[in-house]
Amino acid sequence: MNILDTFLWGVLPYMVIVILIGGTIWRYKYDQFGWTTRSSQFYESKILKIASPLFHYGLVGVLGGHIVGLMIPASWTAALGITDEMYHAGALIMGIPFGLAVLFGLMVMVFRRRTNKSVFAATTISDKIMYVSLMAVIVFGIGVTIFSAMQGHHGHNYRADISPWFRSLFLFQPEVDLMRDIPFTFKMHILLAFALFALWPFTRLVHAFTAPIHYLFRPYIVYRSRGGEKVGRRRGWDPVGTSDNSSNLK
Image: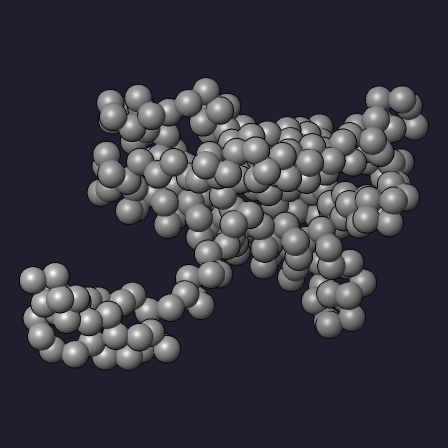
C-alpha cells in the first residue's frame, strides 16, 4: 500500500462526501433562487419529451443496480440460491439497457442543447462541465460492464474487492488494500464518479435532492366566482363572495 492508494481510496472518498454535503448546504442557504433545473422546455419540447424520460428513468435503474451491487454482500445472494453466474447475467441483462437509455438520453439532450440556438444560449459553463462529467462516467460504466461480461469467468469480480471496500467506508475503516489490484478501467470509473459527485452541488444536478413532496399535501386551488352564484367550500376554505364585495363598492 503506497501513499497514492491511501489517498485515492482512503482519503479522497471522505473529501468528496464533505464537498457534496457541505456544497449542498451552502447552495441551499445562499443560492435558493438558483436551486433549479433551469428548464429549457420553453424553447424546445419535442426532443426533450423523448430524451428526458430516457435519461431520468434509465438513471434510476443504473443507480438501483449500483446500490444492489455495492451494498449487498455476495454471501447474501448466495444464501438465496443465486450463483455468481446468475447474478452477473442478471446484472448484464438489466444493467446494459438502463445504461444505454441513460447514454442515449444524454446524447440527445446534448445534441438538442448544441443545435438549438435558444437552448445553447442558456447553457452555462457549469452545464458543459456537468455534461462532460456525466458522459465520461456513463461511458466508462457501460464499458467496464460489457468488457467484464465478455471475459466471462475471467472477468473481474467487483463484488470481491470494490464492494467490500465501498462498504468499509461507512464503517470509517477503509480497506485500501482491496483496491490496489483492480483493473484500471474500474478505477477510472470510480474516480470519474468522485469528480461528478464533487461537482454535483454546484450544477443543476442539485435539483435531484429536492423531491416535490409538498405537492401531495397542498390545498386545492380556489376559483372565485364572477357572477352571483355562491362559491363552494373545499378543505375549509371560506367563500370569497366577490359579487357582494363589488356591489358594496357601488
